Length: 466
View 1 (cartoon, helix red, strand yellow):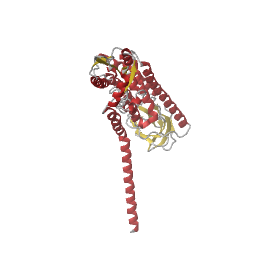
View 2 (cartoon, one colour):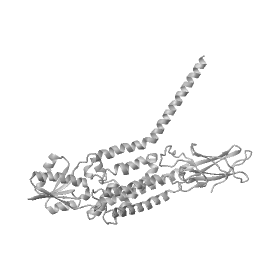
View 3 (cartoon, one colour):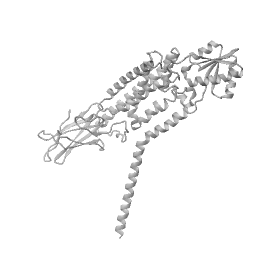
View 4 (cartoon, one colour):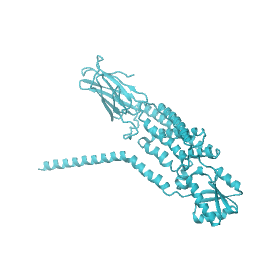
């Protein structure tokens, strides 16, 4: 009886343990699968709903002729504290110059019969509307009318002044998506992928500019193509450079930088003067905002501040190049350590949907979507005859199984999506002695490993692959 009770208790404990392991595995699977949509959902709430739900002016610089500046500042502070910063200028001409030189967002010049308000629609239609409403009210309090003067009207096809934002967006999102898609191109080396990103960026820039020009969204300034190209490379090269450092968290980091943070701080959809302080602080350093400001300066303000914003874009491109160089250096260093027999950093267990998973593929004519083989080979017997049905097991250097394949009627096998590192390849069959070989898998350089398996009475030999 006691033994039966002990067996029952042991069985219940084992069942409880199995249930806990199942629950833990389910939780880990859900966490690894749902973290990215949860991150994206939270990011949209914080980075889009928060800055865009109620845009209000913050420290909008307005040039005002003396002696009305001090009195106007007091009146505006009483009505909208912190909304406007009044700068006193000596004349109406100086007030206009402050707008065209991008030193102020607007200029207000009180006159004997009418008050003049100088604005720049190119800085954002929403800001122009707020300025018109605010200073119309100011003029009415003194019994005067207001006259609006647009010193930087947008292109005919950009009635809302948001055309640049969507043009820039069309160059930003594909640049990031290309990196995700190229990560699955296992037959491309790092150099091949970098060249592809550069070439695709050049095509995207030209097409985006020509489409914008055809739709009258932008003026005819071909130099804009160079600015758009710098943006594509800032996003693409930096994103690609982040992959070996962020690993499975790369999608969240890249999307956070170039979508969730860059878009609200760009000043393209909502003028930067009308979003919360955190996003205003990001505006001078994020690539999208600098591209929009550079294009505005080129198209509408005679090149004012263009160089400064282009230098920021170039800095982002340099960051991407440095990250790529560091990633290549780390890879060479890890390969050297692994070849010397030292323990290398273990592979990422959960590479997420952007990175290819190791899988067996057909040696010839593999289907679309399987990926190009990164490891191929042929297994033969002692007399050179092909051996079918031989199990090919690929493991990491620490013993974890990566993929298992079987040789076909020609004795051939293939595997795709293997990590860029040393792996162990094991060939085994029931009536043959197993053979093991250690090979270096390199991105964009398929490796071949052939085996010759002797009967169990003989010693297995491995032939070096080409």
